[in-house]
Length: 279
Ligand code: PAF
Image (cartoon, rainbow, N blue to C red; front, side, top):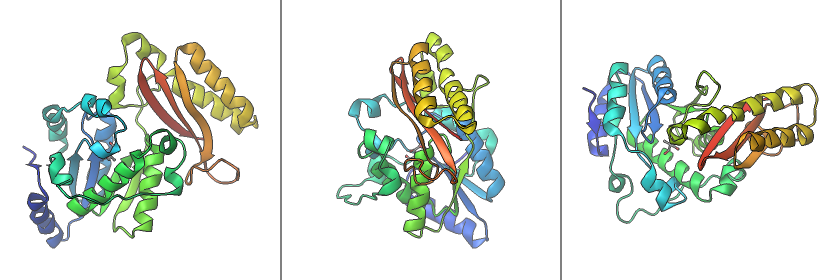
């Protein structure tokens, strides 16, 4: 049985004991509702560190609506069952008031990379992410932290924050896991109807087609509207963004000699899907 810890007071002696023996500690921060994508992060952590902690915390500060927060799946027993065969060393699943006790008054706010795209569309979201991730690093004393590239902008925000605040944590970005038809794995995929699930892989397909056209020299101003029209024709209700950006800063892709990333957010059957690929 994997120990499930609820408080920092339980966490600290365990981690200090590991560190006293010279062992390295990896953390995989999650909000639960675990799927293969999360498990691949856990496997990377197992390969990269001596001890692995998975955190499960549905962070109220990063939700834009109370309804979305209430609807977020909480599946702790199933999550623990999925983690058991991976021999994780601890699950840290604190209650909200253990993370944000009365009087809590600090926000970690990253400018620049957290500004555009999801930063603009989901006000306060990245402040919530940066604040909780800083706390999870402090709570677990991890040496390395593993994040999925699926949330590309989140990964860049966390990298920026770790550098800016001299946090002694290596940030490792792991490849997005995809279903056989190309759909990026996400806890939200289970909310798609059977027919929308058939349509959902169009997002990745349209992005791959646009990226290869741009690699062959087609301007983004032509390739991206075509991809967007394709998505709307295939049944997506709305495309919030389909944008070619500097992969690190997420600024408009002005310097084409730097690594570029194509990022998208689109709505299908009331579910917001995001994805990104390199160009
Ligand atoms: O990617 C997530 O699941 C969350 O944003 C994270 C990093 C666990 C912070 O709550």
